[in-house]
Image (cartoon, rainbow, N blue to C red):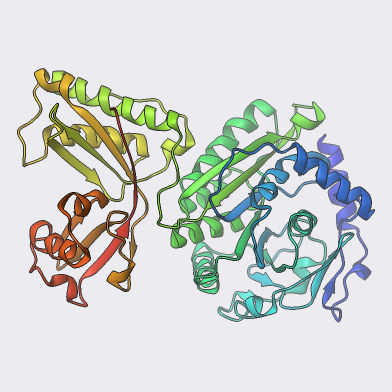
Length: 485
């Protein structure tokens, strides 16, 4: 298995430089006929088969970014197809491809600024305006044609894009060995380039661990995938540098995680994981592959939880509250669901048998996984809400639990952005802060300005008209709320 992959790589490196003309803005393919079929009919048919076989959970959530592998199609095409099938049908016009450099050793980020890229399926044009706005923004943001001369990691993603999209342009980026600080700046410039456009897709090219026994590769890859899901850019970078994790594309992945944090793309889902051994049957030395999608935060609601996930969070809240109220012991929970391991804010609300409020405590932003945030807020709601005495064991059977999971807050430019009853609101100034969940305004019958006045005066301890002060920061968020009964 290792020999087969190695020979493909050597063949790719030996491709004649005549396939690349520095005076020709159309980039000819490097690995056509090696990593994928050179015959357009065979290539089209192969990709169709990969896409047909890819099984995806139903969703209508828009996708902002995907991670896909870049090995030979026979090894990783089935995994890559999951990412591209997930975005099929969305009207993207600009697709930025972030790819690592395997052959050219350089310490900058190379952006191809014009022309197009050819595959057996035709030529895809470069989005020259988007690309040229990146080149030169920093001394490390350059156009280095040598970075593309033998590289395959960017090229192999393009035929998939040609099969699932029409009338689109690409921004080809090959990333060298630069610093996290440069990557953070590049992520910022990417975010500025995207702006408020909803027709830009980021494609991140990487494989995972290389040439370990399957039994060793999988645990290592799962740690890497968990860092990706939790947007742990620094950890991914550090551990790839030390060898505790492995991604040949750890530079573009680090950039992607930094970008996701800046854009609020916190809803991350792994669609498929496999190793080359799943295809070849050789488990002695494998390469890991994953398909990952990053959903857009549209602030109309948090990423949807399944019925099973809601049930699990309510179960954690109930068991925690009952145990702590009776014994003072904090329970520990083993959780493997990636969705419940994401770091998200949450509130836990308690209601009496007569449906009267009995306690409500939450965290807007949490540094803990969601299931632990819910656990800790269940304890706080039962014992720390200053408006109520602590819950007594005799009350436990009569209390109804409610959990609210919060989207990432975002600042607003105008109060007109607040939709009463849909958005929770955070108001802060001079070290004081107040928060209302979305349902508060509805329960009290407040309109937008009354909501802000009540929030300023009764929750933040500020003058009632503090929301009019330009120094006051106002943020909105949305919630997904569910109860035991």
